[in-house]
Length: 176
Image (cartoon, rainbow, N blue to C red):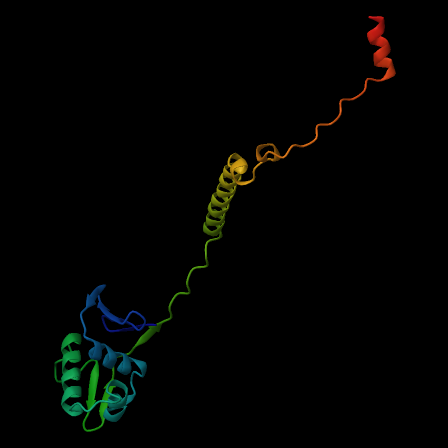
């Protein structure tokens, strides 16, 4: 989903923040924190909840680390003034994203083009047909090498007896 707030757009799937079409460089945990705050705009995200989501099994100095992350995120968003525009600090409790956020649903992927699949199928079918024809020609030209004929093996096959001429033919021969 693409979430829009102020001059910014945050894409959950691509994990990138843009401002006026330009990508804003952010590190991993700052992106994670921004994503958390944007999940529930206007609602309080407690420090404990943020700790569970960002540092689930860690023993880092959480209080200082979270303060540094929020400070860097505010600097990136240009939210350093005393009257915060984006992130509100609720002392000893947590943080709240206070700027209105609009969510743009992602456009569904375009349906597959039928023409492309037909063209691919036709190409593959033509290649398969060509390969079959080459295989048949190869087999016909090389057939005698693989399957010898009875003449080449030396086994004599009885020749059929010559046909006897019929009476009518004999009569024609005599009269001529």
